[in-house]
Length: 260
Image (cartoon, rainbow, N blue to C red; front, top):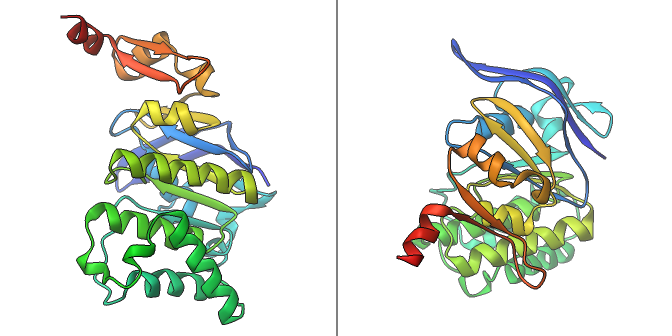
């Protein structure tokens, strides 16, 4: 059930955003992190895969051309979670996650309730289950939106900056859960993310973009090198891969400050 993208172009109005993206692959059971500077086209790429933005080229999932499917048919295969997770719905957290499940999967009420309870527990949302969505903080709403995404059980799950509003504890907790979900259920997970340390720690594979173009793909160890970081981000950085801890990408400016 590989996702493969070739010769993908996308324009918004008269402005071209994506330029012939080719050779992008994401595998089941893995997290693929989409990285690059602001304006690289990361969000547009995810929207193009989801069918939200019109694009030309080939997007193939499990040997099926996605652009040949209607949005409804695509929605049975994949789910895209945007950066903006605000909601005006007058629902509790539990009701919102249950609704996401029931609108996508036909099953008994008992099975649906069990799935919702598991999702809330996994994302530490049980204490908020009866709280109204409008009363939540931005980070809490983001975790609820992630719970709504995972209970749909998509084969391809795409998340745009899913940890942007979270504190450090919940960043690690959410990404650890997504990693375990990919491994356990064979889901293809693609997430756009700015934090290179989190990408290095949790992603199996990286897609690197700059100015709408695919620059390189590979494992974190292959991609996150001082030379590549200089090319993509115009920074000088030191990269550490300790055997007994998470990898670290440290800008040299930060090292100089620590040594001052």
